[in-house]
Structures are given as structure tokens and as C-alpha cells.
Length: 229
Picture 1: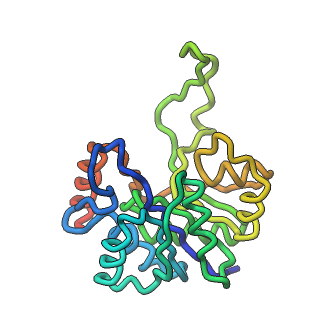
Picture 2 (picture 1 turned 90 degrees about the horizontal axis):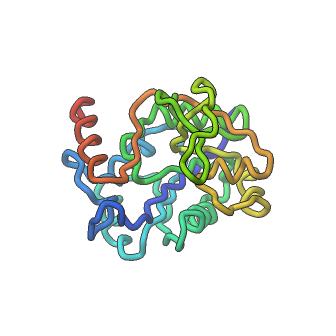
């Protein structure tokens, strides 16, 4: 099975937790910016047909310039972000190519994503309708109450740390946008789950961390050097 896959790269975050004046999308990681590395992986992945980038209005000129400089031919639209991540994703989805059958939603701040992982998770979504990249959980996780007292210990073998891309049949995702429960939502899988959707987790073959703190930048640079990129 195959389809027309549009990637929605969500790059409209404020970088508040990093304490930066500029967008974290433009942080230098060993000679290339965060967004350049992210877009390069989707440009290289043969299974991706089109890309929409969601960014802040204040970043649009610089973002457009980097896209042009790198010759990212798959980027078809640059759209403004909303006041929340949910709104930003929706803006990106609505700007996708009309031929789109599947949506691959990815955090722009995950620049270490590799094309092979993109290919694997999209192929899984072709088969089952919805799939997300994730990792095994190595720490023991505890469920606590309002006083931070342990209530229970889930089986570690049943736990997965979810990442992006998260890939969905377009019709399923649009149905979730219309009828899903967005209150307290933390990712797009949860929105699809709220209407009874089943999402398969595909284990990432590479390190795919999200840049949230300054320490994450140092970790990403170390991984890039180890990869020889």
C-alpha cells in the first residue's frame, strides 16, 4: 500500500524554556541550523511527497531564506503558527496538498530524526492507519497522586516514550480534529485515541531527542559529531 504523504513540520515554538531571544529553530548544530537538519531528513526520505512548515511570523523571512538556500524542493508552503501547538498543527494540516492521503506530523525541534525512521513509521501507517515513532522505556515509571505519593508501578515492558513523526490517514486525523477531545492533549496520538483510533508504535532506530533545554543542544551536538554529520 502507498499514498501521498505530506509532512507538517511544527516549528512555531517560543523557545521560552531555553531563555533564548531567537527561535531555537535557528540554533547552530555543528554548522547547520536545527530546522535545516530537520528538513533535510524529510527532503531525503523518498516516501515524503510534500512538506508544510509552520513557523512564527517573525521567523518567516529567515525560514524562507534557509529553505531557498538549501534547495528544499518538497517544501510547498510556509504557514503561521497558532497560539497553541494544536492550532499550529491544524494550520499546517489545512495547508497540505489536496492529494494528501497521509499526514506525517513532526516537531521541528527534533533535528536528529533520520530518513530511515521516517520511512519505517510512514509504511506502518500505510498498513494500519496510524503510527508513531517511539522508544523503549528504560527507567521504572511510577504513577503518583496529588501528594506525590506512589500509587502504582506500570509494567515497564508495556511502556513506550512517544516521539515524532506521528503519521495518520488524513481522513482519520480530520475526524479527530472535528470530534476529538483536545482538553489536556499532549500529542496528536492522544487526539486520535480520543475517537477510538488505534496507533502503532514503531521503535526508533536512532537518537531522536527533542531540543527543550540548553543541555539538549550540547547532547545533540555530541550525537551529530558521533554520526560524522
